[in-house]
Length: 152
Image 1 (tube, one colour):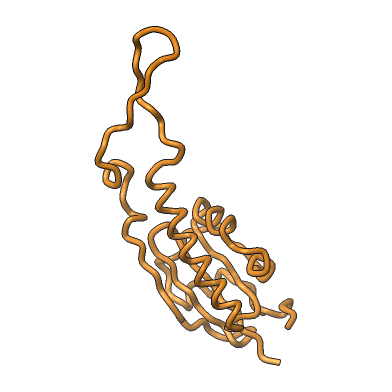
Image 2: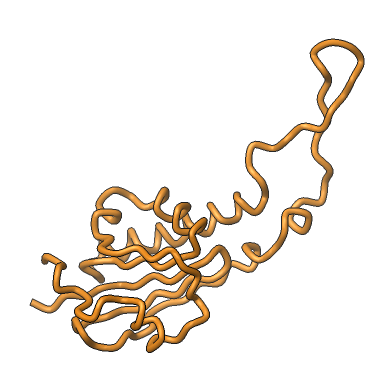
């Protein structure tokens, strides 16, 4: 039975999805996503100063700290978009296993947003930012026999 592995290479601004249909074969790029807001800094995403609050005692005031930074929110938004794409791909039967290669912070955000059955398909995680590499160079970061352990 032929098995298909998707290799997701991502950071907080770019994601590329490759496909391998042979255990030792080359990778083909299947899809790419660009999230330009992921490249921006907090001060470029938020135009307002933080809100002001009152001290518990006395007339003092202080700046409120947001629960999450704007860049963390953009990272979470992009991770959710990618997780939804992977959920649809799994539901449609487009892959048997997943490899996640992502910048460490984005890998954690993506892992948190994957649903249980999709997370179970992850056979390998690499915490490196490799979105700039081509398919041949990426293949060097993967096992020689890519899906010998994938079960149908």
